[in-house]
Length: 214
Image (tube, rainbow, N blue to C red; front, side, top):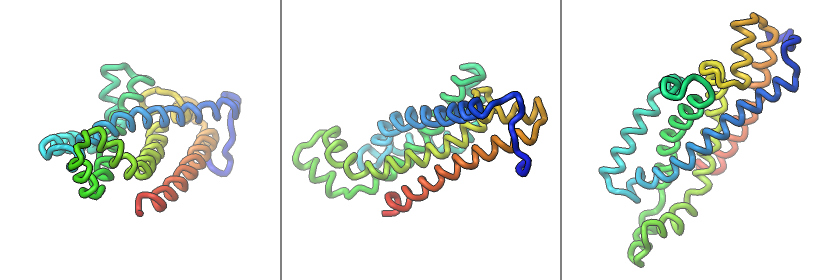
């Protein structure tokens, strides 16, 4: 499979590359949706910006969502949105929101409370505290966590593409293995997925070491 990897007459390299772009696009879309919603909800999940009861409720809910794998959420939403791209986007975004709320809220909770208290003392509103203190202090961490989630969503998009029929390189690999039994063709898909995953892993490692550990 790996030593004799090659494409059959069913696919051209351009078609396979297009499928890879579809998988990457699915990961980008679900990461963007998840990050925008999660950023807003993380303000209410952070203890230093919200009351303790609201924070606990949100964190308990997102802990439950995170405990269930993304692929299962996709299958759950496929009952409502039918199997395909719609259920894949909703399921992946749903899990991304829960993951990023935890990451964002923990970054916000690391802000020095003296800064927030000083702004409150001057009469700053809740939104002014967010834009003048919270976002400037956490933007690098938020962007880093967002990319980490994008990396996760790429691997999820490969699996979801096969399981839900959402398309992409995962679906093509599934068809080559279960319908055509062409293991050489699977080898090509695996190599491409591995290359992209490796590139994302290096970028993620760099971001985590430069921003998340400082």
